[in-house]
Amino acid sequence: MTARVPIGIVMNGVTGRMGYRQHLVRSLLAIREQGGVPLRDGSRLWPELVLVGRNEAKLRDVAARHGLTDWTTDLDAALARPDVSIYFDAQVTSEREKALRLAVAAGKHIYTEKPTATTLHGAVELARAADAAGIRHGVVQDKLFLPGLRKLDRLVRGGFFGRILSVRGEFGYWVFEGDWQEAQRPSWNYRAADGGGIVVDMFPHWHYVLEQIFSPVRAVTAHVTTHIPRRWAEDGQPYEATADDAAYGIFELDGGVVAQINSSWAVRVNRDELVEFQVDGTEGSAVAGLRRCRVQHRATTPKPVWNPDLPSTDDFRAQWQEVPDNEVFDNGFKAQWEMFLRHVAEDAPYTWDLWAGARGVQLAELGLQSAREGRRVEVTELRS
Ligand SMILES: NC(=O)c1ccc[n+]([C@@H]2O[C@H](COP(=O)([O-])OP(=O)(O)OC[C@H]3O[C@@H](n4cnc5c(N)ncnc54)[C@H](O)[C@@H]3O)[C@@H](O)[C@H]2O)c1
Picture 1: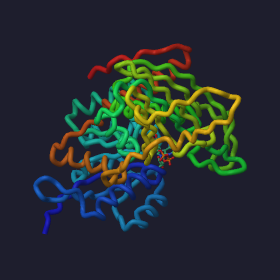
Picture 2 (picture 1 turned 180 degrees about the vertical axis):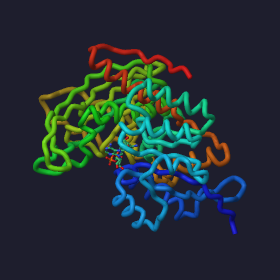
Picture 3 (picture 1 turned 45 degrees about the horizontal axis):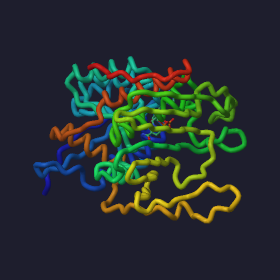
């Protein structure tokens, strides 16, 4: 029988949307269902989960639903356990930094949702502290593992685009205000004091997508606004939406690539997917979403002629070709968890650490600065 190597993981924030669905159910429980993570020496790494949260009743309910018995509302006690080696955090953003610091101090490896902190200073200090403690650290960068973006990455690596000119991203959907229909996102996202805001939420994602698939971001110009100033919370009470709900950003990348990404929770979807990136290059273009990726090569590019007097006879969308999967795509959160667990257990390479997380927080902070000051802001390199 294959040897099972247990690895203790404290999971904080499992009653939340991301912590429960993506990290507990779709990642760690799915890993257990498949028999653990296979290691090079033939053994299998087996996650032993300790659920942590604020609300005893909710925790007990989540644990019982999945046959888990190890849970506590005492984070310090969980971190003091010698059989725990990893701390995972999917709490609300505003609570993260403090908890990650406790985990570093306890000598635990860290795996965390983004953003890693609410300020660049906090994110950098955290990365430094983690390095100084000699622990392993990783930050969720799930979008990189989406089938659509994996196919886009494949096109870039394969030289499909020639010289890449521009990237245009559209992200967003209508988040209901909460009065006549319940909001589909937690209300803290719309309160600045609680760590909300679309820039803090989405710029870290755009940062790693741009940096990893294309090239590092060198400058940002952003216009940021709150389109919907009043919303209704989970308890039905109205509140003032103090955080930004839309950001219109221009990101200048190494090599002259211009990326322009709109992010909005106040837009109605007239796209094929909730996020789409169009990439234009000298040899071809692509449109990638969460799952799909379509291309148009230079040789199959039609020649539209501007003539508003006549109705267009072109079916522009039909002129693109689907990029085939050519591989099986696992859940992105799970795929990244497996990589991080191997990184901890057998020193497997792992790129997306707290420094990568800090660069994402930096882009959010500089985006907000750009908007506040009404100017383009250059991105300086972070020093360890
Ligand atoms: N990677 C992604 O695609 C992605 C997507 C959405 C959210 N996130 C990140 O995940 C984190 C959680 O987001 P979510 O949408 O799951 O939020 P959520 O509100 O559904 O869950 C928040 C969790 O934090 C806990 N919590 C701890 N202290 C709290 C406090 N003071 N107030 C409220 N809740 C508190 C809650 O109990 C809950 O378990 C955020 O940091 C967010 O940026 C990541």
